[in-house]
Amino acid sequence: MADRALLVLNASKTSNLTSILMSWTCPKCERELKAPNQIHYCAKVSIDSLFDGKEKELILLFDKILAEVAGWDGVLVSTTPHCIVFMHRYTFLVIRPMKKALDVKFYSKAMLHGNLIVKSTGGEGKFENHIRVTALDDLTQQLFGYLYQSWQLL
Ligand SMILES: [Zn+2]
Image (cartoon, rainbow, N blue to C red; front, side, top):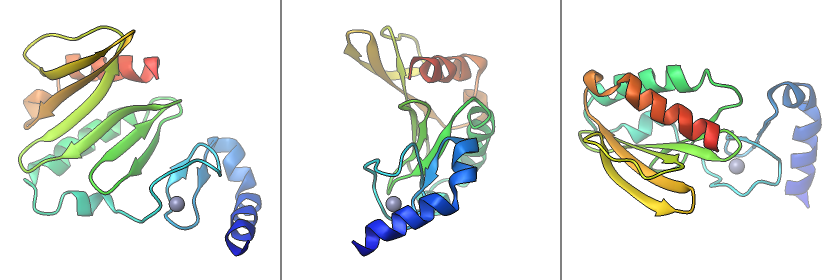
C-alpha cells in the first residue's frame, strides 16, 4: 500500500505538468510513461551507460536522430537495459547501440526492400524493419522518412 500512496501523491503533485505533456513520470525509475499503471521496466538506466564500450561516434549519430525525432508531436523517450525506446501512441522506434553501429528498429505498413534495410519481417500491415547506422552518411532523408512513417503508423 505504501507504493500505491506514493504513486497517488506523485500523480497529484505533477498533475499540472501531466496535463500539459500528456505523460506521467514514474517516481522510482523516472521514466516517462503514458499512464501511471503502464507496465514498464522499472529501473534507472542512463542513456550514457548504453554507450559504454561502444564506438564514440555512435553517440553523435544517436544525438542527431534524437534531435529530429524528439521534435515530432507526442514523442516520449525512455531507456531499457539495452535500448532507447521512442513512443508515440505505441513504440514506433527502438535504437540499440551495438559495438560499431546503431541498430535502428522501426515499423512500416508494407515490407521494405533496398540496401539500407537489414531485415524486414511481419505481415498484415505491420512490418518490423532494421537499419544499421555507422556513419553520418547513413542519416539520410530516406531514413528519416522511414522513421516518420513509423511514427504516423504507431
Ligand atoms: Zn518505474
